[in-house]
Image 1 (cartoon, chains in turn purple, green):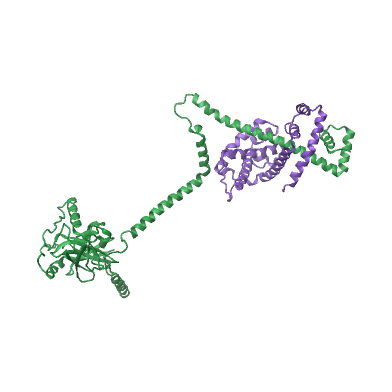
Image 2 (image 1 turned 60 degrees about the horizontal axis):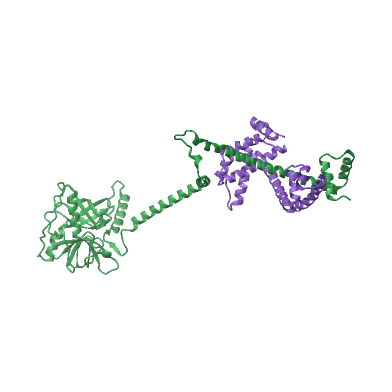
Length: 200
Length: 388
């Protein structure tokens, strides 16, 4: 992970990021609990509900978390500010799509500086990723059984080929593997036709 | 010939590092040489990568959800734990909100700014409307259409005086300007010999000061003592020190009602000189059926207001108040019985010792001819001049 100026990061931020990167679930839970009141307050203040706040916040944490796991996070501010910026942006998007009128957000004073967090770029990347996932989900839905369960079992749920062979009743692992490759070929067609067609 | 599925098998074992040395080198060489194959490999990695990332995303989402649930659950136990511990008074009310109340709270926290603005706008609109209505009513209500109160506006006099003042100013700045000239005038008459005068309320309405002027150009200052807006009556008292009294009044004030068709007359000051008007009592109710007034067929003009309405025997039966514009010679006068009631209630209410009311009970005009009556009467009829 490259961090340009680690001076703005508090020691706890550093420790948290390191722990999350190491796959520590408690660290993620701690982070989640730490900043939830801020985002919840922000969304509630800007005509959102508790559920909206939860959606937005989980989306925001997801962006942060995936960047951390990738090791591609370039944080130039506190985690708190970064999360605020991401969630603010997300909520603004939802509001504008809901409302015909221009939307003005009430900001908390202490998080007013959100422009230089790099959150915008991260969000664009995350949106692209979202689109990819949406297409994938669509393709999986069109794939039909047993291909879908087979692929989901192997790639999404990390089951071993042996387990899948037993589960789907193939005579041996090679049969299952061959079936999986055939499924992949079909998925590829579905996925790329959908994904490439959509305008960027 | 390899099918696409075969290629995928190859790719997968390559990506997982399961290929043996020569096969591996062979594939790498082919990937470098064959762009179609390289593209196929790129697609394969992108797809499997996306699938894996998608799986991870779903796991993370699940994880976050459980974290959120755990967080809510961590808040919740306090709610369960609290009733068990011995709490006598302070239970946080926030912990016991129902579903509807939570919805309401959310709505409130989301929209309170809007609600506040809307409420203040509504409040301001209400008060502005009330205020405007009130102003409009005070300005417009007292005079119904078709009814004209007969006080005289001395307009030309006012202009003359302004011109005069200007001239004086031009000639000599040291000379003080003349005292302001009265803006309105009406008629008044003596109520008691002690110096009480009756006139119409609308004559002295909004008055700063009131001047009484007799036939022989005697002037007295007077102040309003009591006003009855509803019956258009006002009682003034002469405040001058030099004033000693009117002497015995020649007319009596009738406390009953006069009869229809009775011949009546009035004296008043619609202009500088006293003017006599004669007619008969044509109705025992006034404008729009107001029973406090008579209708009389005397031609009256602005300035007649407050004048006495006398019957043939020289009894005072009313006080001239107004006329109807769209009817021929229909004037209205307040019935004298209301005046008597008014005076009685005033005398009862006030400490009668200071300024007692002694209404004239017996007239001296009965049986004499009209010119003789007028000669005696005109000494007790005055111009009421009002300064604003």
